[in-house]
Length: 88
Image (cartoon, rainbow, N blue to C red; front, side, top):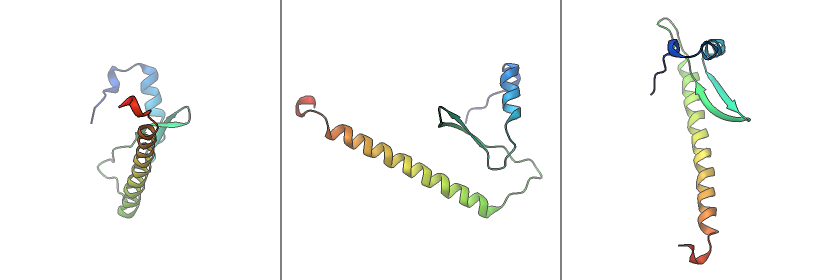
């Protein structure tokens, strides 16, 4: 995982990051309506979490990944099947 020191970033970037909601489940940044990045806060020393909520979030992310992988697999299959016979 890449660490980015906000101290070396432009003030506008710092203010943007600091303005993100402090939601325990994190935030999804979107561009043109498409997810671009997920920002998940690091829990503080005294922060507590609900193991069931964490498990549900992990399972939801797994299902989201499987759906995305299925989409790519179908796109790849379609692309290969629609190649002209002499393209290979």
